[in-house]
Length: 297
Image (tube, rainbow, N blue to C red; front, side, top):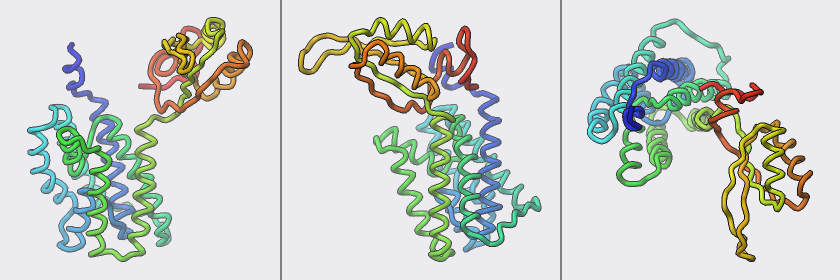
């Protein structure tokens, strides 16, 4: 199978996760946002405005607004992107319809702070799961993807400004107090989405410059059972060639790595940085002799 064919393959797991993500996001929108008069950004925010002003069910408004956007996206985006977007849009509309008719009520004692936190956490978790498995719920995501692909405008920048416009328009039906809590909800929402998209843990990447590089390599591979890559570098002052070691370890192994390096060369130069997600031996599947820090696909 070619690389492009693999990218376009529709996976059942993706569709399942998109379904769960849409269910969680719709639940947050109905049970927390609508119930507590909190606004939202994007197309969902537009549907809440239409609900407040014209009593249009957000489930129907979601479909109606997304039809022309999906049609436009069909001409510019890939087959899988459009299929996942169409599926996500339908699932979101379906769960919006369901949650408005299922008698679910969570009593937060009219505390808008708790409502904003609950909306941000639940909606952010659902959207993060949705995005992580390649799905979207249409709307402004389609516009942002098209502008990023053909105009080079970062997707996050487009989504931010569209959200600002929608939130500002939401003042036609909510007051400043509710808008303040909506912004809190949006902040929690975005942080949780970023957390889920960047992985559930942060590994550590380490760059090492040392004259005793071979001894360090042998010790790391023997003691930690981690691979080491050698990058050819050159000193900026001396212009002498020198190898740079690159190692990725779990946070719990970082101290052991530092001890190994210091044990061989106390003058070694080390740079440590976060790696949001690592895949490969020892991270997404077991190493030959150890099975910790394993992360499922």
